[in-house]
Image (cartoon, rainbow, N blue to C red; front, side, top):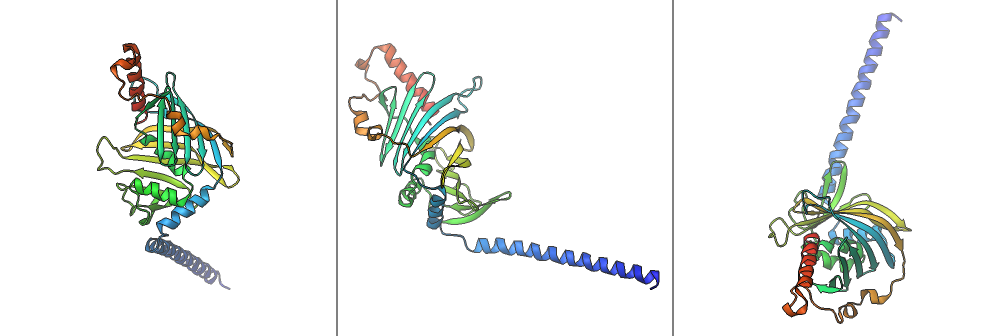
Length: 298
């Protein structure tokens, strides 16, 4: 065969190969576009997504968590304070957090629909919105969690599909990319929660928009998952970070730990101490303690 004809045949084969690769690329691109179109055309309903999320998170009877909270934004010229905490989860609806700083001890108890906060052994009325992050981890029951989400404005009958870079997730409560509405993000692959937005940008300064991000999900027991880092944002500014030091499953807790009536028995309300309740130095210290924790637990 003449050399010229051989060369022409090789060039023709190369052109055919290049055309085939281009055609494969076009087909792949169309397939991706169609998959996104199909995903946008039908999204799993919100109630199913919540149930699927709870199934992925897993169940257990009780959980003990040792962690620390790092608080940001309290002062420019001082390191962020750290709160050391021991959390007790009695699933599905009992919770206790024992917290301490260098100067103050705090106990927060939630049992069913009741809540109690104690500061240095006194009943306090400090705002507990910062404790909301744990409700997504505590209420591992669809009815309880659905009711809790509804009270924070999340409409679970609304769902959509969203993406952040390569990560794709379900949005319960809003049509992506709307982030001004209360909503819950659930990872499309793992069905574990990623973000929970509480409140809206239209709320007043007294009730700012809060957002919780659940990071570093880790299997801490057979079929049970827990985030080792949680971030809390207030009006899109990071105000606290939770870092988990250790976890223990199926710990036996005494019922008295969650007995709000017993804990309140004999304790005095300290939000507005009476003039005759204590000497002036003690009153000043009480007010100082309350103000400190109002700054931290806002």
